[in-house]
Image 1 (cartoon, rainbow, N blue to C red):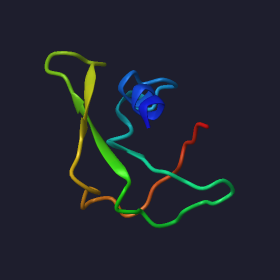
Image 2 (image 1 turned 30 degrees about the horizontal axis):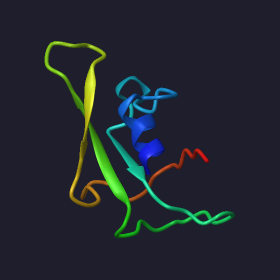
Image 3 (image 1 turned 60 degrees about the vertical axis):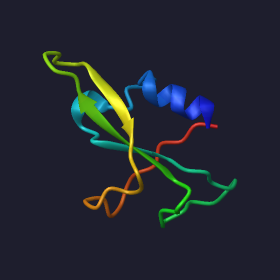
Image 4 (image 1 turned 180 degrees about the vertical axis):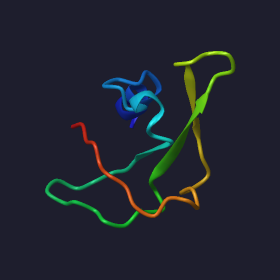
Length: 78
């Protein structure tokens, strides 16, 4: 979890995609399993643009899955 959050907060690999991605989720997956349903223990984050900066943003932890999200595309590390 700590490594995943560090990658997210430091935007390793351009997770934010220059503003294309509005949200990120950190989820625990078992090896060989591709989950298709979000779980209660998933941690959701939202990218928030910093005032006055074109490319600056911060990441905030949300309380559960955003209502406007119904599917996603996974990017994994491990």
